[in-house]
Structure formats: C-alpha cells, structure tokens
Length: 321
Image (tube, rainbow, N blue to C red; front, top):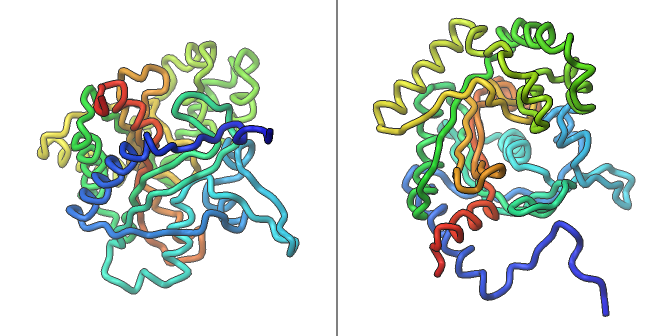
C-alpha cells in the first residue's frame, strides 16, 4: 500500500464538501454585496515576490516557505499567503488605471511548512479580500465590517474583534528603539526566536507565544503612544466609524501582524471557544507594498480568513448537525 497523504495535508471527503460549499457561498455573497470581485492568482510565484513583499526577517520567509528550483533553474515558491500575489497581479496588469479602490476577494489553498495542529495545516485554505488604492479610514472600517459580516452570517457567535495601529515608516523607528531598549536587558532569558527578532523585527517580540517571553513583555511600550499625528488621526477615525456602525471592538496594544508590509490599522477576529488557536481572521493596512513590488505609491488594506479554522468553529457550535 502507498503511504498516506503528506503530513500536514488533509482530504476533503464527500461528506465534508457540503460544509465547505456553505461557507464559500456566504463568502461570495457578502463580497458581492460589498462590491468585491473575485481574483485567482497562481499557486506558485517567483520566490523574490515573497522575500520583497513579506520580508526576509519574517518567520514565513525564514522558516515556513515551500521553495524549490524548477527545471529552468528559477527559484519558485508555493504561495504562503495571497496579498503579495494579488498586489503583483494588480501592478503587472496595470489595474491602477481602473476605478479605485481595486476591490477583490480570493478563495484558495496556501502552503506553509509549519507544525501541523487542529486548524493549522501545511496546505491550508484562505478566504481573503484586498482593497487597493484608498488610504481612507472608511476603507479600513469597511474591510473589518466585511469580515465580521461573513462570520456572523455563517452563524458564529462569541466573536471578539481586536484592533491596533502599528504606525508607519515615519513613527515606527522611534517605537522600535523603545522596544529594543525595553527588551534588551532581558533578551538572554527569552527564546531563540525573540533573540533573533530584537534587531530584525522587534515588534514581533510582543507576539511571542512562549510563556516566559509573554511574562517579560508585560509593561512593554505601547505603539499607540508613539504614533505620529497622521497615524493618530487615522486610527481615531477607524474607531469612530466602527462605533458609529455598532461594531464592538477591543483595543490590543500587543496586536501586531507577522508580515513586514503592515502599516497603521491591524486587526484580528477571534472565536473565543477555540482557546489558544482562537484567531479565525486577521489583516490590516499595507501602504508601502504596491510600491515595493514595483507599482506606484498606493495604499491598500485586506484580511485573510482561515477556512479550516472557521469550519472547526462552526462544528463546535453544532452548525452542521
């Protein structure tokens, strides 16, 4: 007998397809209501796209990508996320000449070499949206509301929205220095990943899941205390719009995204009954990514939702019984 499916992958059997179609249908319906069109990008891209777009110092690029040399001697990578690929398509096809913002959604498989666990596979599936070409806070609020609407229409309860601002290239260097000054006296006590991050990406020190590192991070400087006037104004407007729309949220100064391209607004939606793996969606603004990939200076925002994690949450609520 042949060996089973590769570790970290999973068959979607006929008995489960109904649930997948149910969530996909809601995702498509809500996106249509919000004016987002579907885009489909290649499953593999040139490795340089993710190195430049995501950042060499991130765990995704450093540890988790499925990268190989093809028969033509080119380095290619199975996509670990889809924002960089959507932006590449946007630039390559000169979509910035269309009416902006360019609003699209995607549904498909992603690949990361990670330790498999419930709702976290090496081949996993994401639903996500991107809105490129608007720096307005209303676009941030719309993106967050779209994600919440999808999850609520599926019937999920006990959802918690967390938001933060991670600043911009103007104000972030001062904050990075404050974090380094705070953590450096304790860095020898922290995990190897944190010891590596303190110089490369100190904001990720706030995101470490090791208990000893989390304890050291208590009392760390808050990014919101270091925001420039523009970032303060933007963040305040996002909160104002969410409140006006009746969307409840919790500010979390330790909420940072794991990829280098994020600026200003960052958010995460948690389904609290899942415990340690409670995040079902997350995203934020990426105002420098289009230019980094070779396009014009242009803002963007988006999120990704883990479909396996959402299905586990729905099963936990008994949605398919």
